[in-house]
Length: 73
Image 1 (spheres, one colour):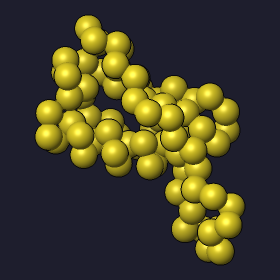
Image 2 (image 1 turned 120 degrees about the vertical axis):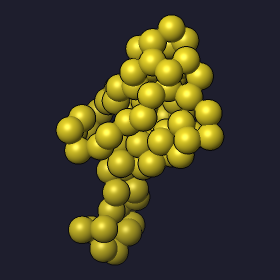
Image 3 (image 1 turned 180 degrees about the vertical axis):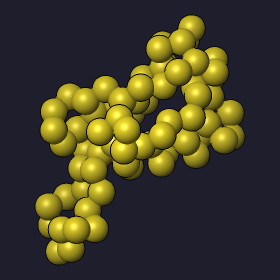
């Protein structure tokens, strides 16, 4: 999973960001730098999506949002 997505440094302290899974379908991103920031919780896209192959996993959604925030610092 971790090698599936690339995470930019923390937008607050510049520290390393890591994926923190809670289960196979949910988790968050945390900074392991000075600020210890934790992101919101993320879940896989709902199973109601009729195109199973297009459903995104929680870590893909989280990385997209994290990296967008990191760009805005």
